[in-house]
Image (cartoon, rainbow, N blue to C red):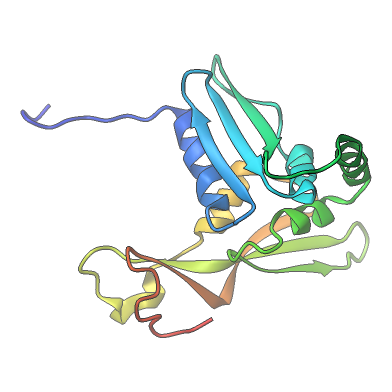
Amino acid sequence: MIEGTKLGLSSPWDLYYREVEALFKHDKDIKVEMDDEELALNIIVKTVDKYAALIMLFPNFKKFGNVNLKININLSISSKIDLDKIEDVVDEYSRKPLIAILAQLFQDNPILSFIKTISGVFVNDLHYVVFKKEVVQYFADNLGDIYGQISTLYQDLAKDVIGELPGICYCTDCDKMVFTTKEESVTNWPLKG
């Protein structure tokens, strides 16, 4: 090891927390926190519909080798909702198709571009959840080759966080752009939208 260097390693559950947080960081209704003492991922939700969608898509525990990360999904304290209504909504979501649950989960989240369903010829329909592409710009980077820097970040996060679901394809849009820099969209070069 080189003298004076530090090696910092993250646990797999810490990486998972960062992926969940990145997937929902632009959503004003969802907040993600990590409780290292309890080894728990806390997802706080403001709306009952997104709460029900998360309950349907996320397990209670995520296993990393011999470590179990507890996943707590809670409604925000500021959400004044009758408990019977919550149970009714969760029950209703248990009967909905997966694509409707995903549509509700990503509603009003600016990373989602659109959702499209293609009717299957011989079997079930295929559903495409299409995220906006993202430009990851590094300090003193040249935007002249902007198309070489576009990543499929949100598509990859959805695959890692939500996982593979039958009939669901996560994709990245070719037309819409999200900027991720310290000064997000200072110039919005070259596209707006």
